[in-house]
Image (tube, rainbow, N blue to C red; front, side, top):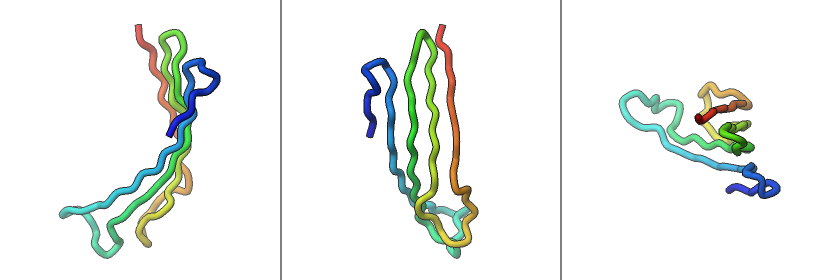
Length: 79
């Protein structure tokens, strides 16, 4: 979901993601389901594009190592 901020090319967003891990590399003892959420701000100005976000896990297998929060950004320039 996203919301236009002031009609100036900037967007606030919220996301929810879930998934299942399978295959030979998956550890069946830990479990298979993951879920997380993210909020962020993205937009552009005079050839620059940015995306700043913070996310956190909601659900993950017991014994699975996960950070409490994940911070990130992406900054690009197009010429």
